[in-house]
Image 1 (cartoon, rainbow, N blue to C red):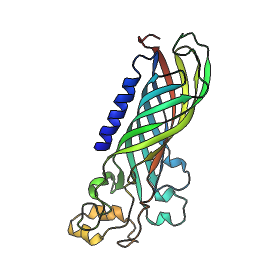
Image 2 (cartoon, helix red, strand yellow):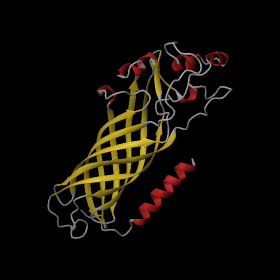
Image 3 (cartoon, helix red, strand yellow):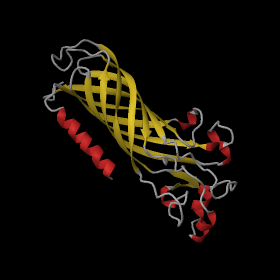
Length: 269
């Protein structure tokens, strides 16, 4: 919660600093999402999912702008699709909806120096880079006996059991986006763009997998058979065996194509 408040303060501060600038924009678009973590190996097209995107942007200079973005996407992966040797023995899988609120600075490498000032612009092409901070909500699920089951309340790595187990993870987390893209403004007020944005998160539980297998007898004592089955679907592993890689945080990628509408500070196109 403290991290979320810090992010909100950042967004409010940076938005406030842009008051009085000449131009602002609204963008809408969509594209693809991809997950990297304990259940991913090399690229597999079945792990590509959909994403939708909205943003508000405001310019400091012709080169530099701030964008507040909202992205909603699906992430998923399965051991059965991974190409790393032996990883399929776990037979784990997951999916999660993810909703991300981001604040990012965009820097255009080929700025139109008249943009936002005269509003008499010619068609203009520019590559750009961006980076910032985001907060996102997620809630991983696994398919079990004909339905999708939420994993965090089950504590598949012993989070709700007595003993030396990790605390339950929060479903609200921070990430650090960075990436690049290209934009083509084909009229004074319209542009199309394509973003490639990587997100390094501060959680290793996007996929509900991080540490070691818990003591399965404790699941039985707690009458939590579903947690035991989803923690160790194949029954091949023993308590204390490695289940994930806690030294590496999960991450995800958005590839977004967007249409941007530009307005001046009075709301005119």
